Length: 444
Image (cartoon, rainbow, N blue to C red):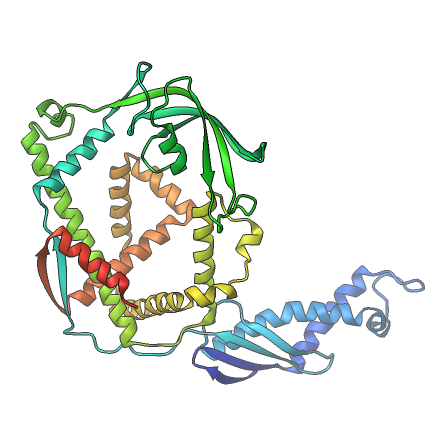
């Protein structure tokens, strides 16, 4: 098989493929022999229809069958022969198939760039970890109390912030109910910011059995076009009020946790957990800074198909966040070109980072063993109180093991990189760390 390769761009290869006429002829012969066994033509016994008659009646159909059988294999062979690993499905055009002649076609494939990662050894970074202060421990303990709070029904007072209210509501526009704008026995925490803000605020001061009309104005860019820019009057009725009763922060409370006997011991455990979280956050920031420098230092071209897919995933993620539903078939095939203006540069940098990390993974010889995956699954099972074996089977079914493998590979790549660099640790205050984050976010 004859193959000519042209580098159209750094990540695009154009292959002109010619399949020998002999191979094409054999495929035509096989198709016509199969056709002879199947078709019935008046005046001829089954299997005895002359080929020339079949060619007159079925030439176009047979050509398409030959193409369907021959072209995919020929394309795969051409890619293997030339050592090309395409990203996505190559585009095939300029197909020329004629009985008795060679099959010719052109395939355009996107490929990963051929590059070497620039020298990174000796890079210097500062890992900044937040100082854990007593107020942080106090806040952590308060969150623990919140988790153990009990809800008690009250009927002798009005709703206050922090209460849980059960309500019925109906949205009205121009005196008519709006579709899907109602709810029955809906529970919400007043002031938590997880429901419509105007309704949460409007409930304060109401008692059980009270009713109130609460106007809610939706933004011009609201996801539901019928509500965008409109003011909806929600008729709200209070069904029930519950207040949170938090446990006392004492030794008895501390003993509800394993291996803790006193409140002081619980505070120390909280400090250790917060310091561990601060170290993890510092590591994450360090990895982001390192990846950003790798991308800046290696401005490689990447296959556009990967950028398109990343833009699609950004769109689908935003859709899930805004609507709370899974994307439809039409959503999965959305035209992503309009997203390039706002997200194209971000997508380019993200894909560059992924390609660079994949190359470093190979260069550094990073491999994840089955034992390491099993250990990660066991850790997940312990955190979520699940059976490790059952969890592993579930992850095998939904592709979760590959996600874990990828996460472990990335972690090992970063660790191998960091081992070649100069990393200094610095303890900073929460205010200083927040200021650094704000400054970084403000940079163009």
